[in-house]
Image (cartoon, rainbow, N blue to C red):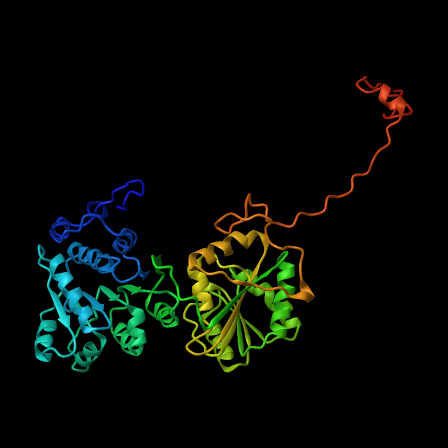
Length: 444
């Protein structure tokens, strides 16, 4: 049951949680769910993989612990091994989550364990052998235990990566992936981060999440300091194709990624661009995996310098040297935009992203700017400047007023017809056909 959006005072009882958990929540003094809890808990209870952007102090710990504990209570497991694993970057945070988990499980029979460096190795081994239900851990110590073949994650039901951006900044990327790959492939995975602009987080999400949902509470992004973001206005798709061709012929880049919203559009662009002698490849979800792998290899090796791709195909695309991203179609939401531009401007590299925006996409692009709390640079290409200059009037939100932000076609000249005086006299009178005028006369 989802919380009623009309309810002005949502409660934890509206989130379909067990009475044992509700009693613990009440004892801890929590009265109302926070925004991240209201949005994340119902999705987790539906067993969805989740990517969540939320700041520390927003209530994210309960947002992943409560539905995970609910899942463990709902489905008893007779299988061996840990059922839920929470990975976190530091011992201090692991201890905080462990304490929080103990409080939430007070009225249940669920067993909670803590695994961090610096604590007794044998005690942790014994704890894992007892098939502890939910374990909170730091990656380094988990890997040490894995070398002893102690943790059994083959039946793991839920994997939670908390503060993923910090874990990656601390160099735990490969460790986390090694642990994730040792877990049950059919598990549910929840990834929590303070930001969605971190390239490592996007890369991690691509590799560990399946058909995931996104909950973005923190939209105070860092502005993508290594990426210059531009907008070029276009009259229509034909004008966009001319702009795209010019950019690919005149910009300086090692590799370029061009995004479309559909595979049909990606396929349609390939021919005209190849006709301009540009080395272009296509990547979309309808391709066979063998063909996709071959195309990725050509792009990686530089045999193909320009890749036309859809969002689905680009998930998991991790290729160095992409320093130009062009959005032929404006993405449908801010999250997809972040995923697209995150393919460039990595680490100390500089990247350029250009969105081609026609009148029907102005409000969509404006919504993305508002979501990111950024304003993109408007650019004119003199050789191909179009008629569309943007909406004449804007709302405070940046959207066009009245939705009339389009190029008005010139009205065709109306041919004047001369009306004779004798025709005016006959207006309204019944016309009687004559043989010479309108009808075929047949005397028979």
